[in-house]
Every structure is written in structure tokens, then in C-alpha cells.
Length: 267
Image (cartoon, rainbow, N blue to C red):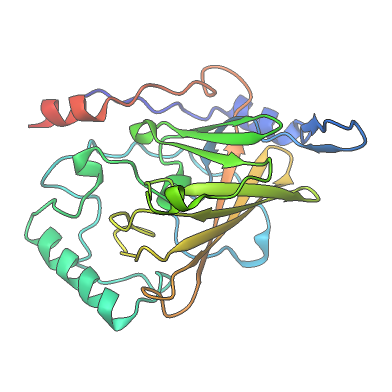
């Protein structure tokens, strides 16, 4: 499968930095809320732990294309151990990680969801590896990731997850949100336990996620993520993702990601 990554041109970066922070009118008209709508690419694409101070990073080079997923070449096999800022696992879940590490080093893709064309899940989806579009309305915000065409919705109308929803976990989970000033606060529950927090760090079915999403400067969006899992994590894990908003074609155009087709071609 031929995969194209849109390049971030100098003009696009300059336009994004110069553009004002857009806002959406509330139903009452009494105040305005930030308008998150648009296509974004990651600034700190390498991921990892939280960025100290929360200051917006300096412009960087365009994200490099990821290798095409294959059954025998996971992006990271854990052979160099765990990153110092990786989630701290309980002994039970560290054993799970070590078993997956040994399997990956041996060349197995059993624990590689990308190789199986499965959605990245949360919070990994917010890495925005191939870019992501945010679509905002009064009652919900939709995140559409180009990678594996993954989708999540954040409901803003006050609804809560029902017992039926909690009993049927999904890759993206069930997200509800509210505004605290100019910050979107999102809580996500009902997540499948066959996804990973970061890399291939496992978690339990008790994992929940809280995000605080806001513009830190014109065109620069920040997502502060806190992952809590009393069964898998020794303590909550925090990370910060930062994205740059694109302002026009071709950078604001996402492409279809026919993952299963790509796997067939890679055989």
C-alpha cells in the first residue's frame, strides 16, 4: 500500500502561528468557546512523558512517514527495555509486558495491533501519527484519525454511559466532556483491555482517561492526558501531546487508510 504523508510547508507553519484562536458561538450567544475544528499534525510525534512547563514547543521538522505495518516487523520490540518515562506497571502487568516483549523479539506479531489492522485505541490514538481531523458541533466533538481510519466521539450534552455501554467496551471507549473556561475536559471509560497505553504497555479493563485540551497559542493545540488504572499502574501516568493546526490544502487533507489492503500487499 502506498501511503502519503502531507508535508508541513513553511507557509503552512507561518499561517498556523499567525492565525487567531478560533472560537465557536454558544447557543445563548452570551459567550464563545474555542473552536477546535480542523486538521492537525503532531509536534512532539515521538511521544513519551509530560513536557515540563506546558510551553508550546518550537517548530520542528515534518513528521516522518511510519513504515508500512507488517506481521514480522513491529515498530518497537522492547529489546532495549522500557523508557524511563513509560507508565509504571504493577508486578502482574510487568510480567505481561515482558511476555509480549519476548514474543516480539522472537518475531511474533500476536501483540501488534497495527499488524492486525486494529484501531490504535485510547490514549494511543491521540498520537495522531498520520494526522487527525477534529469536527466540533454544539453537542459533540469527533476525532477522526487517518491511521486505520480510527474514530472517537466526545459528547458534550451531559449524557452519561449506561450500564449497557459499560458492559460493551470499545477501542476508543466512551468519552464525555465539558468546558472549563477555554479548556475541554474529557473523561473516557469503557475501554477494551487488548489495547495499549503507550507503545505496547498493557492495561486492565479498569483503565480510565482524563484529558485537558486547549490552545496554548494560536494554531497550537495541547492535550494533557492522565491515565488511571488501579490494577495495572502503580500510579497515574501523565503525558502531553501537542499538535499544529493546518490552514489550507494540501496539508489539511487526510487520506483513506486501507490497512487490510496494505497488509495483503506487504505479504
